[in-house]
Image (cartoon, rainbow, N blue to C red; front, side, top):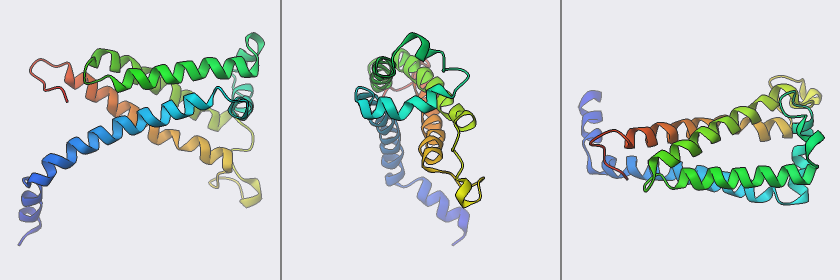
Length: 168
């Protein structure tokens, strides 16, 4: 049996028609869960203090501590993140609303990924530096995957708005 025949049989099998929607659901709601969890943590002093060096060292964001205290900004960010999670979650009922949440998530993850370049100690100098990440670097780099999933949720919600598309 050739590789083409095998892949054709797999592609046409009933399991594929179940796996793809399950993956769609899992990707969307895993992203929602992660953003909501991280957003809820922003209301704790622990998380507020943990993000402080990231924000303070960012040329794009350091100004916020001139306006807000560390805990007030963290709580505001928590409200934004919980809102983003809720907006992404409602795609089945309101795909246009989900588009807004996905765009917000994309902006959020681009911002946090920018901290890779502005936060001291992202690389582990004791291990030779680049490409070895420190704990902070490892914490930040995972946002590349979250960014990719947010891009996917955006495309998925946009596709749902096409005439004749099936909402799931």
